[in-house]
Length: 401
Ligand SMILES: [Zn+2]
Image 1 (spheres, rainbow, N blue to C red):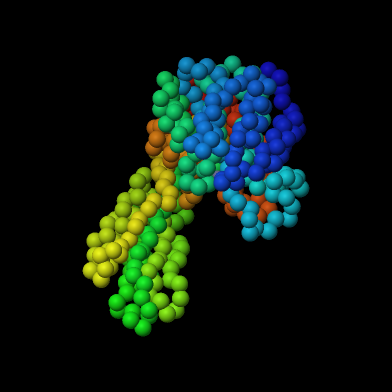
Image 2: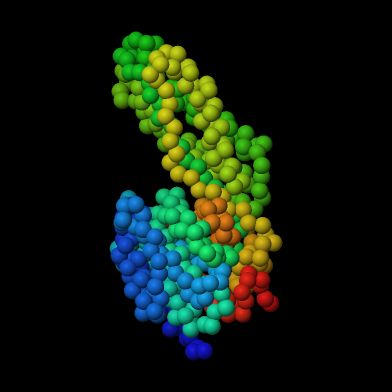
């Protein structure tokens, strides 16, 4: 086997990352040029990916298999979209990678084109290895708006004859082994009231004041969850959280407001707890607030719509994928994180066990002057190098010492 020099590997990662950063793939834009770039790169190693295109035809995931296709393998998963830069103060162009003092700056360096660049940089080594089980790449879109883009790909995986044994989602964890994250459910409640001149306020239906009743109830339930709800000490915030995030209503001081929109979210510990908590809030509002509004005017009421939803991740610490992740990362510990990832979706849609482990820190994600340490990317390359070795020796997840 050809020895890969560390400097060679670093240069390859940097070159790929600079190219990936240069594609403006903020979630509301197309990622097709970036996908085409990856396809062209893979084609130079005679690898063909499989595109899963969205309804608009403007975005696509890519599913790649390297190694024996008829055997279950291991997935490396990353998203191509990044969060907006508008309103942030960047020292340099966010879409032009800059290297300074061992750090690589640019939108997406940490979250999470850095991980994707490492995976791609390791492709020549994956291709050369005599793999007993395949390594897959799952490259998605629209993660930042609720882990949306990976879902069609996972439904497609469900139809494939061989399903992967496990998945590593490379979100920034400083290469810590993450076995759980909270789920999330966001809801918009739109109150339809009745406008009147404020001098005859009692004849109107005040949408803002009814919305305030909902907000108060959300607050009351959030406090109850914090004080009496289930707890998981592995989280920084060890209980389910709920809050009202935005309120928009009213037009002028002298008009009874006929419109108010409230957005609230739950981040729940259990697999489906987030939705259960919001469902209970919605049911309460329909049973108490809405009838009171309709008593004043039958045309008034509340419309509820889901803004976003993703499931929690809750892997057992003794799962063989967790043990393998620890062996490959050279760590004994595991923990859980507050932020959501595609890992929960891999489990819930495709029943593929998933662990979150990737380079860089979440503190750098979504910030102006986002950066990642080159050394973190090289650590991640080491993880993948050991994964390749595992996949040449084993046809299962069982870690070997
Ligand atoms: Zn991310």
